[in-house]
Image 1 (cartoon, one colour):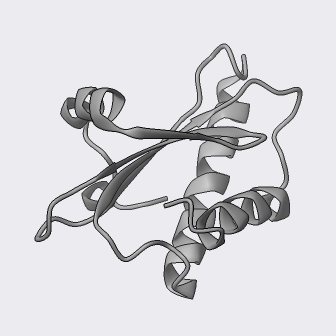
Image 2 (tube, rainbow, N blue to C red; image 1 turned 135 degrees about the vertical axis):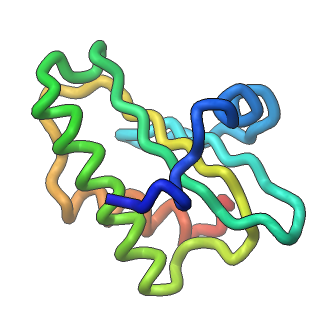
Length: 114
């Protein structure tokens, strides 16, 4: 799990939803808001109860995405520009594997979409 310093606060969500650029992948809707220099990047994963009814599944999904983001950060794949990145999960039947989430996000960041 990301430390709270690297997660987006509730007060910043309005800014993300209004001023962000929207991208879609097969499992996620990703909203990115680029920040001015001097600020640090922050991330958030949102899994609604409409996506997964059980809290166990929602928390599993969040933990997997956060750990993939941590892995990509250590690998140097995340963008160097400071940004707020909100990852909203689309509705699906089951929680994808760690490898599938890694593949989707790695492809997203390597293709230079952000």
